[in-house]
Length: 300
Image (cartoon, rainbow, N blue to C red; front, side, top):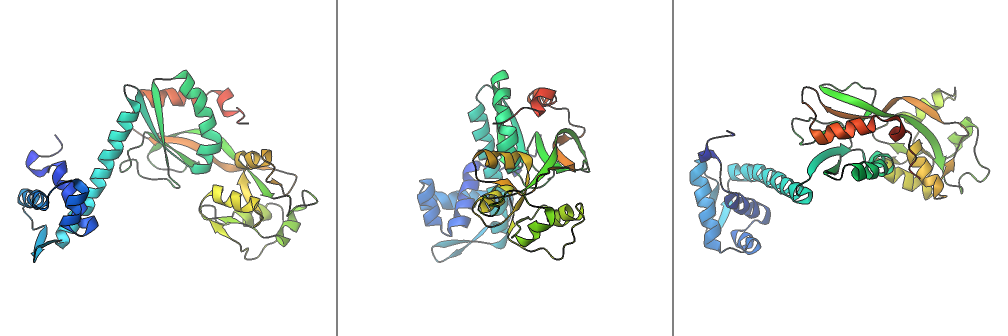
């Protein structure tokens, strides 16, 4: 049992509280929820009596939430969002099994999704739901079955399956590279684009080629997709994962800035909580992703 029923308010009461907090008015909340002003007041009064703490005050005819009421409304909002998402997922899946994955956006778009098409054809009884996350997180606080992380297998409390090692390509538009690939040191004469989650990536790339650098500047991005788009538009050179570069190369928007490509120690992994037995949909996906032909499949 989660908690005694006396501590579990009705969804209607929480909706009233959340709406009053967000809209700042019981009248506006009543309009949004298709209720009367008095119905909103009753919902809040019942909730207050159930919790045993003052949640609102009267200012003339208006209802004003107390600090405790606003804090509780924040918690209620998170609960209502989670409940709505859970309802949407089960409605979308119907009688099929759901698999909820957190993915890195560029990797999910250009590597994982093309492969999931075949997985879905082989397992039509599984619905895969994808949500974007840019960094590792706590599985205890996020309701995902598994996630895609990038790194060197140094995450705590998870099991993992390596999907691919990272290969990076310095890339730019033909307008910045009219004569084609350049010697590594000549890239310093062109504007360079940087990614927040890969600080020092350009410095490391130049260092491995014995090219001395000092305080490399340039535009900063939080996602590969935005940085790739900026490179294609001529803002500068981007150090991109091979799968993203090849997608843009096929479109004729980017070309390699040097002749060589480099494999890093870090890579992309599917991770799931240690100690939690994978459910059947996750087990099917793990077995399928472990096939050699899946990892080497082209996405063109």
